Image 1 (cartoon, rainbow over the protein chains, first blue to last red):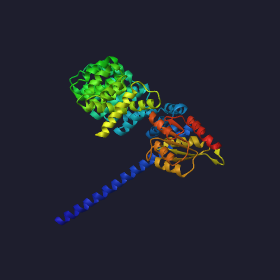
Image 2 (cartoon, rainbow over the protein chains, first blue to last red):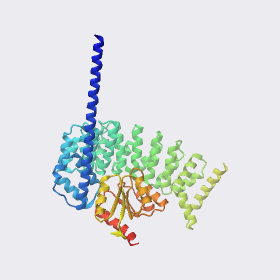
Image 3 (spheres, helix red, strand yellow):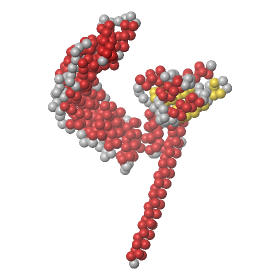
Image 4 (cartoon, rainbow over the protein chains, first blue to last red):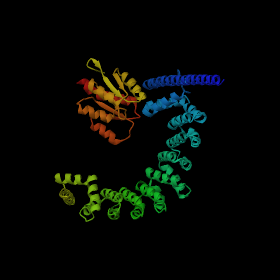
Length: 379
Length: 129
């Protein structure tokens, strides 16, 4: 009895295994054929659009049947990315005449898989007109992160800067990696989006991570109208915010913010001092030379290096570095010599001396460098 | 246009079939012979082992970068008028390629008619030689 039951169980298991293997085989075969058919269609569209472009005319034949095929959309958008001028216009005409934006919109709204919606969003982001703005705004709330990111890219391409605050708002609800990708898209919105971001920062309602990302975005956009709010954030209790603000002020701060950065060279947190030193070099003010000469004796290597690098970039800074290179602080001396070399100051001075057109300080600079090399050799 | 009795032979290297297909059509319309490579290393090898009147190479390719191909050809004294195509908007890359011997640099997106015109300009002196 037991033996019979066992035999039946084994037979059933074997049958099940065979059925599963058969099902797996069918699925794999179907997928293989599907991919093969997609490849054939893709190659066909590549050739067909190439033909359209080389003739400069759009044939009516076949095109209507292609219009609903996502693979045709992909190939066409790929071509839009590589051709310009009259050929670009031919493709734009093709997008218009076939109503491809409508097809992409439908797919973005109706596709069940997030992969298909993300693909549709990516394509629409590259060809959308203001008519599709609302669709992209809706897609900012799609359940798939890739769709939200592509929607933001499309809105940035359209220059819909008013939507930047919605992207910011969305960032507050995102996981860090999605928020960071959305922040990249915010940079693409450009200067027109700066007031929206400045206002959002001013309300203090943004979550910590979003506020930090927003400050970084303002730095990447580099519009000096953000200077005052960034300067205010340099007094924040949060060291991470002060670091972000000090960095951003390098590109998004104007002369009014230079004194604030100089004060930040005395911040208790060394990354803030290091970023402030680097940013002062970008401001280009000769008045920053003295504060940076002070910073080159900082206890922290990064602060000394950034201060020396900035000095090499400022008017009057090279002379200050030469003074430091003859001083008694060995750490400051090393930083000064390193950045006199890295900035090309030594090479340029040597070229001028060799060319018979030296500047007043060139001989002194080269003497200091030679002395340092001698000491190095002797040690 | 022909170089002597044979058609102009062009080496085209890009990993995007859309780009190579488009260039192939554009140049074959001039009765040129176009040979396409999708891999930088293969294109580099072909450049050294065969005779070409012009090369159109992408900068960012699997196998070898466009600049690496130019450097290799220069080391091996291979002289092919080479136009570099690239979607990379980086002046340093442009200058590097020109320093390494490229005769021209075309940014993507490009205009096919303009590319054809530039290609003809760089082939002509060789054809006359």
